[in-house]
Every structure is written in C-alpha cells, then in structure tokens.
Length: 157
Image 1 (cartoon, rainbow, N blue to C red):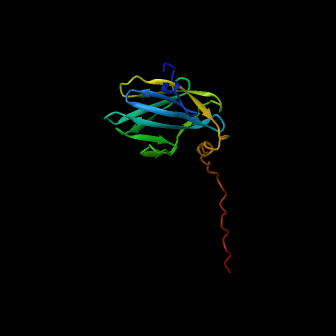
Image 2 (image 1 turned 45 degrees about the vertical axis):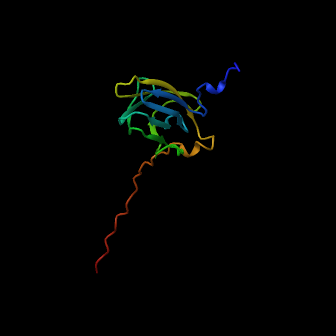
Image 3 (image 1 turned 90 degrees about the vertical axis):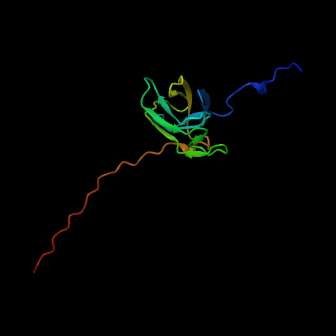
C-alpha cells in the first residue's frame, strides 16, 4: 500500500521535451534537420487561457531571430504533426541557421506577454527515424539564369 508509484511522475514519453509557460503547455518540442544548418521546429501548443496569445520563439546563442506564433484561446495547435487532440495542424516552422548537428541540443527560448519565459534544450533529430523523415526541411530551389536564343532575322528576297 505504501509502495512508490512511478505513474504519478510527469515525464516526456517521446523524443521531444515539454514545458509549461503561464497558460501555455508546449509538448514534444523537437527540431528535425538533415545537415544541422536549417531545421523544422515540431511541437504541440495548448492554450489553456481565455485570451489569444502571441508566443515568441528564439533559438541559438544570443537569441537569433524571433518568430511569433498566434495561439487562440482554448485551442490546441500542432506544428508539423497530425494528432487526435489538435484542432489545427500547421506546417513545421523553418529555423534557418540553427548550427546544431543532429544528435545535439539546440538552445531555445519561449515567451509570451508578461509570462516568464523559459529556455529549453531542444533535441535535434535527423531523418533516420521513419516518422521524422517527412519533416526534414526542403531547400527552396535557387533560380538559375538560362540563355534565351536570339532569333535570327529571316533574309528578305
């Protein structure tokens, strides 16, 4: 009767990490990258509050660029993955210049409104696991210049 019950302990049951920030619950936060330069941020965000919020996401040393994500009140939003409890499924968020090789941890900071932000060490995974390979960032093709043939005038008799 007095045995310790491990099922009462909160833990991350997947490859990502989780954090609570004010009224927001961030679940299974991870980045998928092929080369460690660019990565897709995948996560589920639950807004337990009564107000819409704009979640700020920063990554890397010195904060890097901040991306802002709108999360509606009482809504669950999955970025990049389709889950049964998510009302919305959005594309993964592209993070350019993460400079973290797969297998490493990317320092990320999440904050909204006047809630105290939280820094996380987010795992960076590659496509070697089948479930993550569809989420690898795809490079936007760079347009290349092609020569246009100049028409030669037709001789007149």
